[in-house]
Length: 432
Image (cartoon, rainbow, N blue to C red; front, side, top):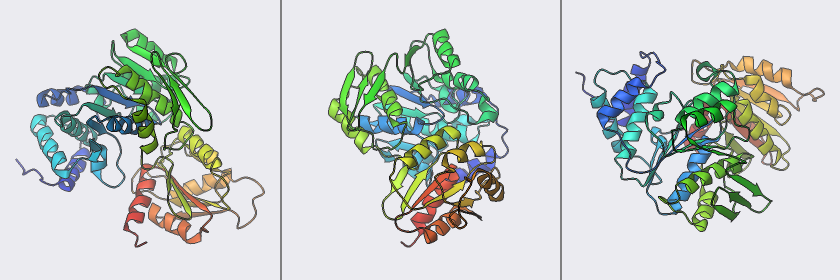
């Protein structure tokens, strides 16, 4: 028996080295076995959130509102940008290394000879940590899909599917109907199943009805309406008027906020929340890397848009920002993404492309992306007005954009989490 690590970095290195040897077996039997051995159970309401885009925003809004209402809130959210601890929030604070290490030891002891992937192991550890932390409510973000995701060994009291779009086709299928069925796998008989996608796939609706879940559909069971100043939520039994817009910017944030308020409506007897707490929670919510506009000049925007649905929302948000002479695009993406579909909504908005390779075997080659950008470039662009350059990593691409951009220009860093994380790390380590 090898001695187990006693620091978080050593644990993560061990799990990564093991992960390489474990074939991802798409099934929950192994995770369920270890969960039962751990005796993992939540003594409070559990809200689970799945979706192609918008799940992180919805989780963060719920956390922010419930914290303002005085509840002890646990949150599991993915992925992390700089520190693994970002994945586990205990009452609004990041979990400590010591808390995580204790739960890693617990999972390792319960695992015995059962193989777990990195994601399965860390998911069980964080759920174990939150289950033992005396929370009033726990919010769990689903990683991939829903039906076969490791968090789905827990039965949620409220399950939310934010949006259904094409992504992760290797695992989830190539149509919205197939993907909708996978995401509906988090629904449970007799429990609230909320879908805030304006056009829910019929597979999701059919599955919810077949198992006897209490399905809440946008436009039927809950709705929102807004003007420039404020917005209103209407549910089955609860209306909330004169709400502030969420501080998270973007076209889809009212869909996400409406889903969060529907979940709070479902849980209103167990977790009552007042109007002022909802307003304050929405105003103060923060989520790194989701149309995050950094202070200072030139304007820097960080956005993890890496599928066409998210890129279209990013393009719309950039269009709403007001005038900037030039826009620099720092972009890196995985080769298995619909790269043309991600680039297309931004082709007319970005003047200067800084294309980066990513620290992953799955990275698209910057030269290949450059060829795709060139093919999408609008006709008639003057020489020098548009440039495309390639770089070995996101930090170098960002440094180049910063060196060329005027103070009234803007730099949009988007694509893979690796792209945004690489730039965040470079900014953190820069002397300025």
